[in-house]
Length: 465
RNA sequence: GGCGGCGUAGCCAAGUGGCUAAGGCAGUGGUCUGCAAAACCAUUAUUCAGCGGUUCAAAUCCGCUCGCCGCCUCCA
Image 1 (cartoon, chains in turn orange, red):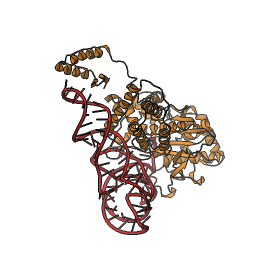
Image 2 (image 1 turned 90 degrees about the vertical axis):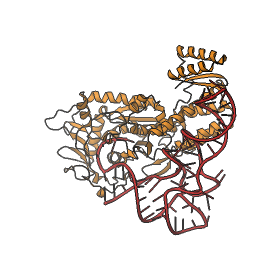
Image 3 (image 1 turned 135 degrees about the vertical axis):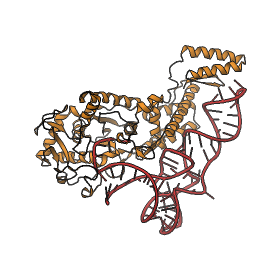
Image 4 (image 1 turned 180 degrees about the vertical axis):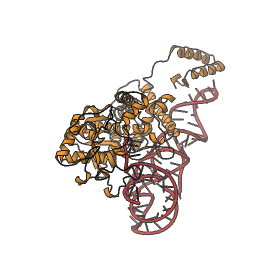
């Protein structure tokens, strides 16, 4: 079955074929580690995780590289303004290196909480400075660079296909519409490859280079790292939709100028998470929700968020609200309950999976990762006229391979604590004696301890809330 | 100013030319239950922002209008 993916480069769905049969090189733009990731950022990483899992489910080997941007880039406009890492360090009274390490750990923890599979290779910008310098040297040799008072710049006018990805008319862009102009640049779209450390200022992060002491520009790291680790397997490059116009456009320009070869066949971009009536979530908008402050602190399973993102397509903006999270929470609980009952009814009986449902599920996934429809297939499966062991085996495969929702978690839940078991015993006795008042009182007591009591045909069921 | 996206039931949302407009959440009715909860079954858009056009046929294509949003600083 063909895997069809939307390629930003062509703005259409294309059949995906890896450069080397059976193997895929995947590069996903990672975070700048100067603060926590917000759940809008995390939506993109969940989308990329689904992409990777679908590639694997299609039987492909995936070499996945994700970078950590730990060099401080700039808060202000392109190539001006304050350095984000240094600013974070100042804010928290720690070194830039400490800040990077701390937020890198926090980021990886968030990914783990969302069941996002780790990349094959993690790489840090600060570990590939020599590669970045050497790439800039190549560009310099080929005549794509020029020097200004504050750095080495890429001359976008010398790269004919500049802006092919963004489809923006270079001349129509209004530099300075929102920010101060950099008057030293030849073209408004030119960007820094290497920035000089300011005179008389000791930066925490700076390196020697053929052009003087300084630090690399933002875009060069992704080019250097993808070439270093993926080499001739430049299949798919992902990121947020905001990267199309500047970051990825510049990556393509500098990479293709340097190598003369095509830099990545497929470019895929995740849409934003919106909040408060369609506004994007951003640090600057003051609606900064993290996994910690929105889910963990409210005792909501982070996988509820993972599940919530599956309800909209990755190329459409997703509406975030308390209601949508509550709906996802209810839905996930129901789903886990259904799987739990299947486990109980089948008593662990092994079974082959249903091939036609597998094909149907894969078919929806292979149509540009249509998760809403893939979820509909799961619902259809649960209602289908199939033996329970087959249903269970099939849904467990879907979950393990792609969904990553731990649908049989209830079954695997921790055993009940002794005090709860004792209350259950007392309540059973009261019920046998038809002492309903005592039975109801004990039910309330168990519930107050954070457990749900359900009386069914097979007896009493007590599960953690 | 330039580029782009969106508007489908109370909510989230799929579908982008042709069978009865997916699915979830919430709601409603029922079964079960000492009562509840859970579960299970059933049910919920003659209609896809509005108007006009193309077509044998449009939520899906075209035009206009209204509303919302993103990018062109850093940003997922």
